[in-house]
Image (cartoon, rainbow, N blue to C red; front, side, top):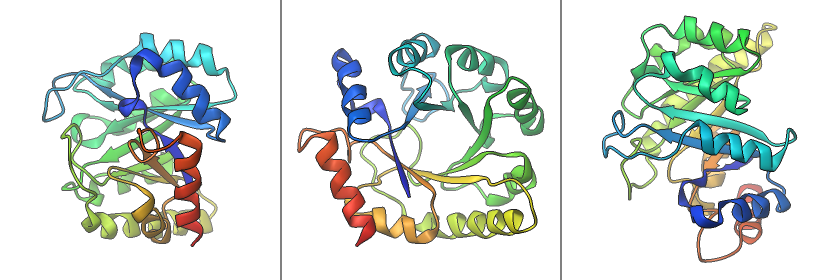
Amino acid sequence: MRITPSILTADFTRLGETIDSAINAGIDWIHLDVMDGNWVVNRTITFGPALIRSIRERVGPEIFLDCHLMVTNAEETWKQYVDAGVDLVIAHIEAIEDPGALISNLHSSGVKAGLVLNPDTDTSTILPYLSDLDLVLVMSVVPGKGGQSFMPEVEEKVRTFRSAIDKQKANGGRETLLMIDGGIKSHNANLVANWGIDIAVVGSGLINNKGTISENLDEIISAINN
Protein backbone atom coordinates (compact mmCIF):
# COMPACT_ATOMS: atom_id res chain seq x y z
CA MET A 1 0.00 0.00 0.00
CA ARG A 2 1.35 3.37 -1.05
CA ILE A 3 1.39 6.36 1.35
CA THR A 4 0.68 9.91 0.22
CA PRO A 5 0.83 12.89 2.60
CA SER A 6 -1.89 15.47 2.93
CA ILE A 7 -0.19 18.82 3.46
CA LEU A 8 -3.02 20.32 5.53
CA THR A 9 -1.25 19.66 8.84
CA ALA A 10 1.97 21.30 7.66
CA ASP A 11 3.24 24.69 8.79
CA PHE A 12 2.54 26.65 5.61
CA THR A 13 5.37 29.10 6.38
CA ARG A 14 7.69 26.10 5.91
CA LEU A 15 5.68 24.18 3.34
CA GLY A 16 8.50 23.92 0.82
CA GLU A 17 10.81 22.40 3.42
CA THR A 18 8.11 19.95 4.48
CA ILE A 19 7.52 18.81 0.92
CA ASP A 20 11.27 18.43 0.38
CA SER A 21 11.48 16.31 3.53
CA ALA A 22 8.65 14.09 2.33
CA ILE A 23 10.30 13.56 -1.05
CA ASN A 24 13.66 12.84 0.59
CA ALA A 25 11.90 10.22 2.73
CA GLY A 26 10.75 8.44 -0.41
CA ILE A 27 7.33 10.00 -1.04
CA ASP A 28 6.49 10.36 -4.73
CA TRP A 29 2.78 11.29 -4.50
CA ILE A 30 1.34 14.37 -2.72
CA HIS A 31 -2.36 14.84 -1.90
CA LEU A 32 -3.75 18.39 -2.08
CA ASP A 33 -7.01 19.10 -0.22
CA VAL A 34 -8.88 22.02 -1.75
CA MET A 35 -11.78 23.43 0.31
CA ASP A 36 -13.77 26.44 -0.85
CA GLY A 37 -15.23 27.58 2.47
CA ASN A 38 -18.69 26.54 1.36
CA TRP A 39 -19.07 22.82 0.70
CA VAL A 40 -17.40 21.30 3.76
CA VAL A 41 -19.29 21.34 7.04
CA ASN A 42 -16.90 23.65 8.92
CA ARG A 43 -16.66 26.22 6.07
CA THR A 44 -12.88 25.88 5.91
CA ILE A 45 -10.91 27.56 3.13
CA THR A 46 -7.57 25.92 2.35
CA PHE A 47 -5.78 26.88 -0.87
CA GLY A 48 -6.26 26.91 -4.61
CA PRO A 49 -4.49 26.77 -7.98
CA ALA A 50 -1.86 29.42 -7.17
CA LEU A 51 -0.34 27.39 -4.33
CA ILE A 52 -0.62 24.17 -6.34
CA ARG A 53 1.26 25.80 -9.21
CA SER A 54 4.04 26.78 -6.79
CA ILE A 55 4.23 23.22 -5.48
CA ARG A 56 4.46 21.85 -9.03
CA GLU A 57 7.28 24.24 -9.83
CA ARG A 58 9.14 23.17 -6.70
CA VAL A 59 8.79 19.40 -7.06
CA GLY A 60 9.11 19.15 -10.84
CA PRO A 61 7.37 16.62 -13.08
CA GLU A 62 8.60 13.52 -11.24
CA ILE A 63 6.24 13.89 -8.25
CA PHE A 64 2.59 12.90 -8.75
CA LEU A 65 0.09 15.52 -7.55
CA ASP A 66 -3.58 14.92 -6.96
CA CYS A 67 -6.13 17.50 -5.87
CA HIS A 68 -9.16 16.50 -3.82
CA LEU A 69 -11.81 19.08 -4.62
CA MET A 70 -14.15 19.71 -1.70
CA VAL A 71 -15.91 22.52 -3.53
CA THR A 72 -19.33 23.36 -4.89
CA ASN A 73 -18.21 24.14 -8.43
CA ALA A 74 -15.76 21.44 -9.51
CA GLU A 75 -17.49 21.15 -12.88
CA GLU A 76 -16.80 24.83 -13.59
CA THR A 77 -13.30 25.17 -12.07
CA TRP A 78 -11.53 21.86 -12.75
CA LYS A 79 -9.40 23.31 -15.56
CA GLN A 80 -7.76 25.78 -13.17
CA TYR A 81 -6.27 22.84 -11.29
CA VAL A 82 -5.22 21.07 -14.47
CA ASP A 83 -3.50 24.27 -15.64
CA ALA A 84 -1.80 24.52 -12.23
CA GLY A 85 -0.12 21.18 -12.89
CA VAL A 86 -2.01 18.41 -11.11
CA ASP A 87 -1.91 14.88 -12.50
CA LEU A 88 -5.26 13.77 -11.05
CA VAL A 89 -8.45 15.61 -10.12
CA ILE A 90 -10.73 13.94 -7.54
CA ALA A 91 -14.27 15.34 -7.26
CA HIS A 92 -17.02 14.55 -4.77
CA ILE A 93 -19.89 12.58 -6.23
CA GLU A 94 -22.22 14.46 -3.85
CA ALA A 95 -21.23 17.84 -5.33
CA ILE A 96 -21.41 17.29 -9.10
CA GLU A 97 -24.35 16.92 -11.45
CA ASP A 98 -22.77 15.12 -14.43
CA PRO A 99 -19.87 12.87 -13.33
CA GLY A 100 -19.54 11.33 -16.78
CA ALA A 101 -19.00 14.69 -18.45
CA LEU A 102 -16.42 15.75 -15.85
CA ILE A 103 -14.49 12.49 -16.25
CA SER A 104 -14.49 12.93 -20.03
CA ASN A 105 -13.31 16.54 -19.78
CA LEU A 106 -10.45 15.58 -17.47
CA HIS A 107 -9.28 12.76 -19.69
CA SER A 108 -9.50 15.00 -22.76
CA SER A 109 -7.24 17.47 -20.96
CA GLY A 110 -4.60 14.80 -20.39
CA VAL A 111 -5.08 14.22 -16.66
CA LYS A 112 -6.47 11.35 -14.63
CA ALA A 113 -9.99 11.41 -13.16
CA GLY A 114 -11.17 10.31 -9.74
CA LEU A 115 -14.40 10.34 -7.74
CA VAL A 116 -14.74 10.41 -3.96
CA LEU A 117 -17.65 9.61 -1.67
CA ASN A 118 -18.42 10.52 1.93
CA PRO A 119 -18.81 7.85 4.65
CA ASP A 120 -22.61 7.98 4.45
CA THR A 121 -22.83 7.91 0.63
CA ASP A 122 -23.69 4.62 -1.04
CA THR A 123 -21.21 2.93 -3.38
CA SER A 124 -23.96 2.72 -6.04
CA THR A 125 -23.43 6.43 -6.77
CA ILE A 126 -19.93 5.76 -8.15
CA LEU A 127 -20.00 2.18 -9.41
CA PRO A 128 -21.66 3.09 -12.77
CA TYR A 129 -18.61 5.25 -13.61
CA LEU A 130 -15.96 2.81 -12.40
CA SER A 131 -14.83 1.65 -15.84
CA ASP A 132 -13.81 5.23 -16.74
CA LEU A 133 -12.18 6.16 -13.43
CA ASP A 134 -8.48 6.16 -12.64
CA LEU A 135 -9.13 6.31 -8.89
CA VAL A 136 -11.88 5.96 -6.30
CA LEU A 137 -11.42 7.64 -2.91
CA VAL A 138 -13.34 6.42 0.13
CA MET A 139 -13.50 8.98 2.94
CA SER A 140 -13.07 7.46 6.40
CA VAL A 141 -13.98 10.76 8.12
CA VAL A 142 -16.50 13.49 7.26
CA PRO A 143 -14.69 16.03 5.03
CA GLY A 144 -13.78 19.29 6.72
CA LYS A 145 -14.74 18.30 10.24
CA GLY A 146 -11.66 18.40 12.47
CA GLY A 147 -10.76 16.10 15.33
CA GLN A 148 -12.49 13.02 13.97
CA SER A 149 -11.41 9.44 14.44
CA PHE A 150 -11.07 6.88 11.69
CA MET A 151 -14.44 5.28 10.84
CA PRO A 152 -13.95 1.48 10.52
CA GLU A 153 -17.52 1.10 9.28
CA VAL A 154 -16.38 2.15 5.79
CA GLU A 155 -14.84 -1.32 5.41
CA GLU A 156 -17.89 -2.59 3.51
CA LYS A 157 -17.59 0.25 0.98
CA VAL A 158 -13.88 -0.42 0.49
CA ARG A 159 -14.44 -4.14 -0.03
CA THR A 160 -17.29 -3.47 -2.48
CA PHE A 161 -15.04 -1.27 -4.60
CA ARG A 162 -12.12 -3.69 -4.27
CA SER A 163 -14.24 -6.54 -5.58
CA ALA A 164 -15.63 -4.49 -8.45
CA ILE A 165 -12.18 -3.19 -9.45
CA ASP A 166 -10.64 -6.66 -9.35
CA LYS A 167 -13.45 -8.01 -11.53
CA GLN A 168 -13.00 -5.10 -13.93
CA LYS A 169 -9.25 -5.75 -14.21
CA ALA A 170 -9.78 -9.49 -14.67
CA ASN A 171 -12.02 -8.72 -17.64
CA GLY A 172 -9.36 -6.54 -19.27
CA GLY A 173 -10.71 -3.23 -18.00
CA ARG A 174 -9.07 -0.21 -16.43
CA GLU A 175 -6.82 -0.69 -13.40
CA THR A 176 -8.65 1.78 -11.17
CA LEU A 177 -6.80 2.61 -7.95
CA LEU A 178 -8.50 2.55 -4.54
CA MET A 179 -7.62 5.27 -2.02
CA ILE A 180 -8.69 5.97 1.58
CA ASP A 181 -8.45 9.26 3.47
CA GLY A 182 -9.18 10.15 7.08
CA GLY A 183 -7.61 9.20 10.40
CA ILE A 184 -5.01 6.85 8.91
CA LYS A 185 -2.05 6.32 11.22
CA SER A 186 0.39 3.55 12.08
CA HIS A 187 -2.11 1.76 14.32
CA ASN A 188 -4.67 1.19 11.52
CA ALA A 189 -2.55 1.26 8.35
CA ASN A 190 -2.24 -2.52 8.31
CA LEU A 191 -6.03 -2.84 8.70
CA VAL A 192 -6.87 -0.80 5.60
CA ALA A 193 -4.07 -2.46 3.64
CA ASN A 194 -5.76 -5.79 4.33
CA TRP A 195 -9.04 -4.39 3.06
CA GLY A 196 -7.36 -3.92 -0.32
CA ILE A 197 -6.49 -0.24 -0.33
CA ASP A 198 -3.87 0.81 -2.90
CA ILE A 199 -3.11 4.30 -1.55
CA ALA A 200 -3.62 5.76 1.92
CA VAL A 201 -3.68 9.50 2.53
CA VAL A 202 -1.92 10.34 5.79
CA GLY A 203 -1.90 13.80 7.35
CA SER A 204 -0.92 14.20 11.00
CA GLY A 205 0.32 10.61 11.05
CA LEU A 206 3.19 11.79 8.84
CA ILE A 207 3.49 15.53 9.42
CA ASN A 208 3.57 16.17 13.17
CA ASN A 209 5.87 17.20 16.02
CA LYS A 210 6.46 13.67 17.31
CA GLY A 211 9.05 12.70 14.74
CA THR A 212 10.42 13.46 11.31
CA ILE A 213 8.44 12.57 8.21
CA SER A 214 11.01 9.87 7.47
CA GLU A 215 10.65 8.36 10.95
CA ASN A 216 6.86 8.48 10.82
CA LEU A 217 6.81 6.93 7.35
CA ASP A 218 9.10 4.11 8.49
CA GLU A 219 6.76 3.46 11.44
CA ILE A 220 3.72 3.26 9.16
CA ILE A 221 5.46 0.99 6.65
CA SER A 222 6.66 -1.26 9.46
CA ALA A 223 3.11 -1.49 10.79
CA ILE A 224 1.80 -2.45 7.33
CA ASN A 225 4.46 -5.12 6.89
CA ASN A 226 3.78 -6.58 10.32
